[in-house]
Length: 473
Image 1: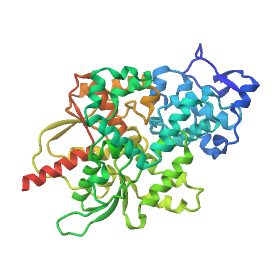
Image 2: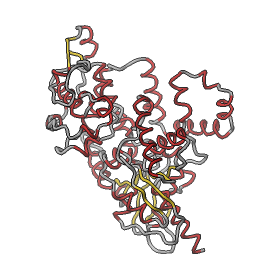
Image 3: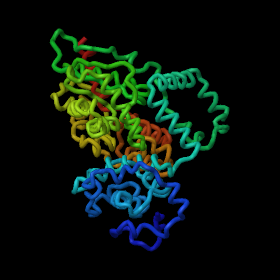
Image 4: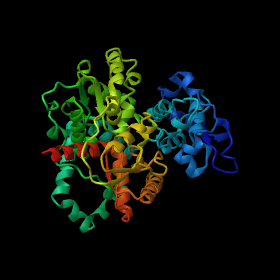
């Protein structure tokens, strides 16, 4: 087993073999501590591992490489290391684990790659092996992973209970009092730094705002029957966006079916190396929907959508769910994708003039290849002037929980994004992912000089439909 070579005189723009990125062997005790019976990377189809041509086309798209100019912090550098692990040339060490978690998982490299490298599969399996071998394990880390991945985001009732308590804390004024009295300084530093960015929980969650089945009015039969995903964070913090999504679907002749207490789709688990729980969450979600009775299953969260479209791969070896997972994948749609696919109705009326810019969520544009559709929706809304955002496809630094685990790098990306938004001179920033929404919103609040508000494209569309109805009335 060997360690990575530290940055020195190497030319990080050149192509290196894994041996060029490592140095002296480590001790036998360290070797034994890293051994684990599960070997996820070596179990992969080797064609996935060897796809990378090391051409370097991914380098200008990678936020961490642009920050450090180190080969190990680039997609092709990480793939070289993963391939070396699969080939048995490298053991999984703490340093390997830290490198894989330094990656944002923004998937910009997949858009840039001419060879079609399946980086998401490599990335998720590398993190799964890191967790299986426990090279980053500590009592504190184990506790937080257990509390979040195996409790809060695995049990819908527990997440809603936590959300309700947080809402009471915020709505009662206790939150404002704690901040005014500076009691947050009693918190550990990492929690103290995160406290200002705590999202505001909605008073009503999705199940209280959306009926189990809603049909379009007008007496006409529905054109389509679709299932609506309410999510986890989306359900607690952006239940109004879920309501807007249902309204936009109804306005376009869709009957909307919204199962109760759906829970997390498992994307958070898959992206953080817990593939077992990701499969559990996928099965629960599939069971919640009558797929044969639906034309589509619609989500409004980009990070979820990117994961939702790969249930067939995730459950490929599950005899009870493999066929249903393939049906699921065929019907999973992002809301903008679905609306454009069915030929959504352009809202009428004049509309209040508004300058809007659009930040592309990484897992929508890079993960799902959806970029044109949200813009088509925005341009169809009366009164909106769409201003293109500089580096719209660059990551904002949210990247799931990256802004929690890597606050320094996430903060740099956040400030760059906010600077571009300010330069655009728009009053509204549209984006289609809850993590991006919060990251941009918090960045704008910190900048103070940026007056823009953040909204989901489907919320702007739903508002236009409501304005149209009011004008008719």
